[in-house]
Image 1 (cartoon, one colour):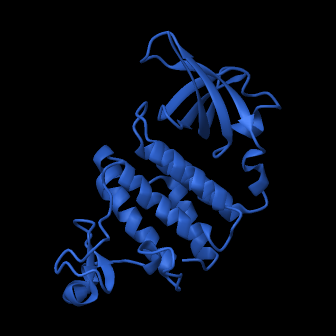
Image 2 (cartoon, one colour):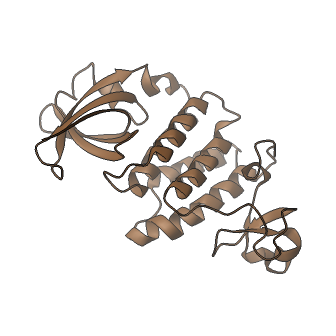
Length: 244
């Protein structure tokens, strides 16, 4: 018998049977776990089965590899506070879908949990969260072992004037070293180098293109999957809002 309790975020839920659901959870210390939740269709539980809802999960399975059952105890009001902000909800859906698609099941990834927690905490800050979302994806790449090396120029070792990233290696490149190949390089927005870097027009789009390239190349292409559709919808909404 496997039993544990952990803090978790709901990533997704799909109906199962008359009143239950299979819920995909990102837990703090047990990684991503799916579990059957009885009574999930109840009026009390439905609001807390949305992506981003914070819960305490009590999990039980007869054998470790079997789909277990769980009870969920909601914490706080969940994502209902964002219902009047479609763009923030799109961000939350994208982050949950990227995590669900990228993380293997039942492997601890506390860094991913903390990054998701930090992103959710920033969602009420309209001017801030798009940059935090890009950093969230970069952190997820790091947690999966595919971190970007933005510390110095891959060609010269210089730490100054880093404005490009090699699409092959994920390493930073200085303006002078990258200029002959600028049409093949990915743009490195300043806010990814420093929290004091500031945001310029086009930076969020450049950041999303950067992390999206490496999520596709290193994570999703290896599983023969495209980037999750909710991420594409987030890009569309950010573009429509003039935020890219």
